[in-house]
Image 1 (cartoon, rainbow, N blue to C red):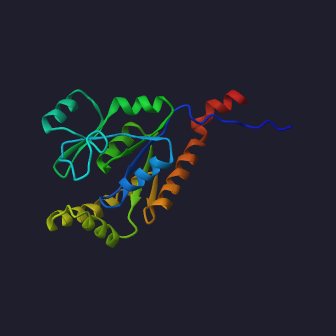
Image 2 (image 1 turned 90 degrees about the vertical axis):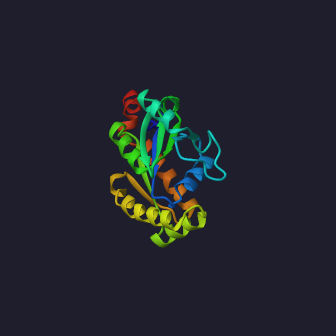
Image 3 (image 1 turned 135 degrees about the vertical axis):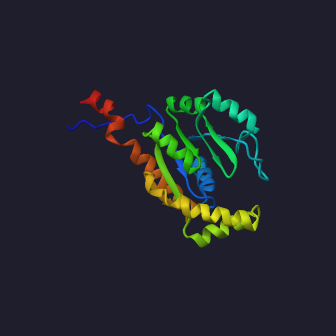
Length: 207
């Protein structure tokens, strides 16, 4: 009788780095993904002001510029970047603590930060969220009600530039329907956990 292979795929968590242009819906996708899966999302620190409805410690850790610069000097961040005149950074210690516990971690970060992490931590899984179209992207940003005509123009111009970086990611997911986008990311997570180089020790231990 052929021996069945049972593989332990939870030895170490996977780092999922998710980016996309403003208005692509990456935040909504990540929220739905977290509701349906046992995944921990890293909370970034930022120097920008909170938007309406954002909560300290849940959406971001809001700090002033001087405090952020001090934390850079202490090497407290896995990555950091300045975007639209504000700093954003990913606290380092908690991310690696959760990964070592065997739990997957999501980083929802900008492209600058994602590419820095890819250079330092290439075993991460890099996923780019795309809008169905640029017209839909414009509609989503406009409907936020938080942009001036000038800032809307700036964000749309930036979106065109940002989309050109999609080829540097491992996967691209079009966010037309949130549930469909979530299913695609779940499939990516499952497939990545079955990659031979990640489970080779388990295989060698059995054969």
